[in-house]
Length: 274
Image (cartoon, rainbow, N blue to C red; front, side):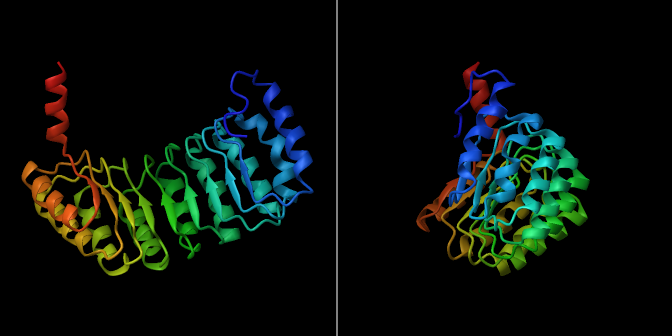
């Protein structure tokens, strides 16, 4: 049902979805995709019954629905009340903010069954991030984690993220882009990956305010030693042209798909476009 109700009046969407999901409650539905439907907080009521009674549900895709903090709270209450063993939750671009993130943290702490979690671009700040990370670390079968474009920085958040990397031994995809993590915290995270990143296949670390060239080189050396990594993105950081050329060639030799372009190259492209 993704992108199914675009163009409908806001008041029409909830009733339409409720009619459909009510017919699915008795069915063995493993995946519900209602992303991109402008559901909004008021529309969550239309799927509450299904979430509470759909015992076979394993994958819920509900990104870009404008849930907001209140809608997220209602959704999470329904998930906790349900008997499902949810494994995949995609809830990005929903303006969860801290309140919604804390509600989601309760779901993650209660279920502990997740293998994929996508909470990208939700305006989550420090308090919400901390609660979320505390609960994520209990989902030790996690394989994909998308935290990009929120707030992941500071001593406590980085320590919790290190715990997740250490404890989730099946982690394949990690997206931490656009979190302004900085040099020192980046070094600490990559040092953890050096000892606990054997399962990692894809790392997205764009626009995280890494400026020190020695730290960048240390991180790329670690990436080169990760046995399963296939994709690495570190664009929009302060990576020099020399490092881009040197490590780009080495990553290519290792069969790694990479994007390393630094801030200075972005600026040059802008100048050329003028």
